[in-house]
Length: 459
Image (cartoon, rainbow, N blue to C red; front, side, top):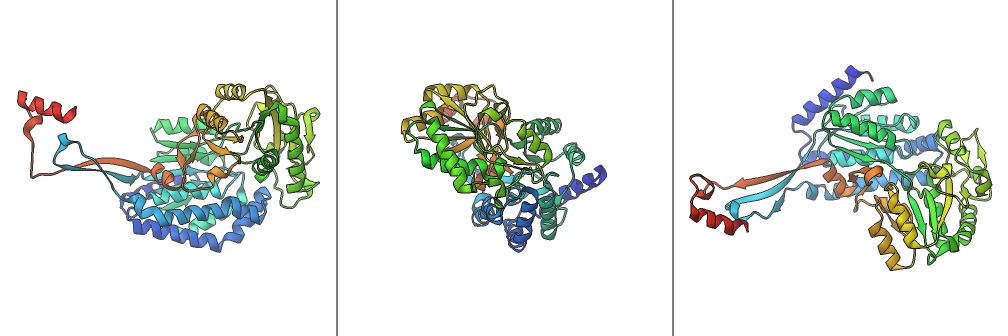
């Protein structure tokens, strides 16, 4: 789509929003219900596209993408009338007689830019929240997941006219053209490097943004952890989607006294979940493209590999790989891995671990395996991170009842459920002042009596 076509789409969306058609709650619920129906009808097509782009099984596609989108839709359809209501708040005595309330209003025309690793979930979830809040939306899916982007475009065009929801496909050129335009809100999910560019371009128009980025999410395991269960849950979270998950455990940071036992359990669990030959497992995914495939191979230190390490360039598959005795200076520890490589770093005490984590960038997620409540409290309160789990991985984002988002280098803002509705809504603070009484104390000429009354009201 060229620049003039993009400008035309945005102008049409602005006019549609300004007409007030998106404001009634009944309209919003009707549109979300239509989307829910169409997703059910196109479920097989969506799953096939996800397999083509990322090698996902039908089960994983539903569990991690289609089903979660349906869950967000169901949540919004149940709660939207409540979320959209004006909220009455207390009025100070000095403002007598009046009524104070907060009105949630949509921003207007929103740009949603989504990534390739969960191309259906991370496109539809923010779209649902934006539509629930009453906005019009321009969607820009990733060029790296073309099959899913194609299905998303077809699906949304079946549901909505372009003046309400428009899909712009393409690559960097289209991204740049979109970011050069003025939107009322921008929601971006992707890498930190691109996130910085999005923030810079948004600043030119003073456009508010949400950034969902990533980072090196640690998985801390102390000596009290139930290692067999920890290994099972770590392997699930790490190697889901072939490690291409923004909240995947990036590395294990464990007590040196249990490192060998934990690694042994992880090796057994990899064989249990993926088989002795994971590269032959039809339900094990693939790396998105050759660029990322060879980048990941460059992060492997062969002498430290204690499990996996095998790869197949023809299928873009890398076996679940564990590296023992990793150090903070290793190549694999210098960037977010975003693939099926799991380095293991050790600490001598939990205080040492906390101090180290406090020094680094704040990750999108943190996972802690422990049976010690004091340790859980220490780590979760002292270390900065977006969100996480105690004695599990990843599942904190699989709910519409809590917000999901990053902190610092891993992003800003959050979404899901009510938090998502609020993200795409501006909260107008309004005082409705009554006309049957007008206290004179605020008007000049000021009088001593009124000053004493004012001090009583405002103390």
